[in-house]
Length: 126
Image (tube, rainbow, N blue to C red; front, side, top):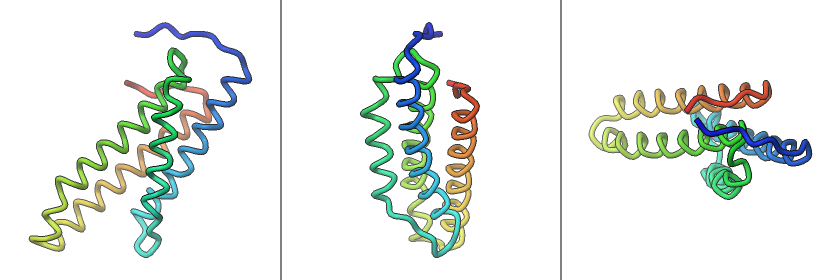
């Protein structure tokens, strides 16, 4: 386990603000994926992903580092799962719809769970 490096309150608040913005962007995309007709732009997800990649090193050694990793892993896994299940749409409509629905709900769950932990100043599990 990495030792937690203490850091000033201003830096901690700045990282927490970045986390809130990132979780909000992820949440907009996640809700759009779950609700039919409410499709949000994939650009929001890319912006959030780039922010997380760029700011992750600033949080190194802090409890907030786990949130950056959590969001990055969530996006990467969701992308892989969507790509792997994409052929189901071409072969059979219903299995593709079910698979993507399950992935979208999982994505929404991860974002809500992470944001709740960030609000409570708790790290995410590895």
